[in-house]
Image 1 (tube, rainbow, N blue to C red):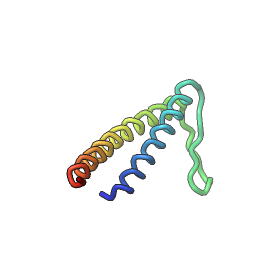
Image 2: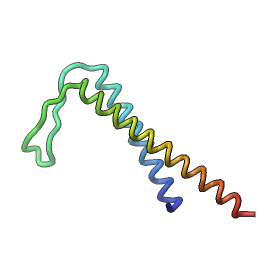
Image 3: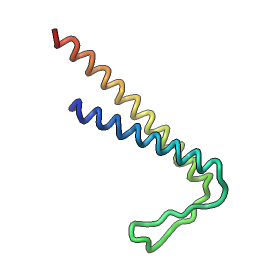
Length: 86
């Protein structure tokens, strides 16, 4: 994998993690419903905040897992580069 692409992906995942944490915290601390709209706003779905919190937590877990793998790949690349450079 291209190092620049790897670093960009790590940054993107870190942003996703921060967003998921924020959404999960807000949804956990509130009651009621939110609405999910399709792209054209022609229809919507009413969703409990507790369900949104669960979804955000699952996304957080998946993003954290992916981040761990990317960080491991970055560390491996750094080790390889150290060996190759005098």
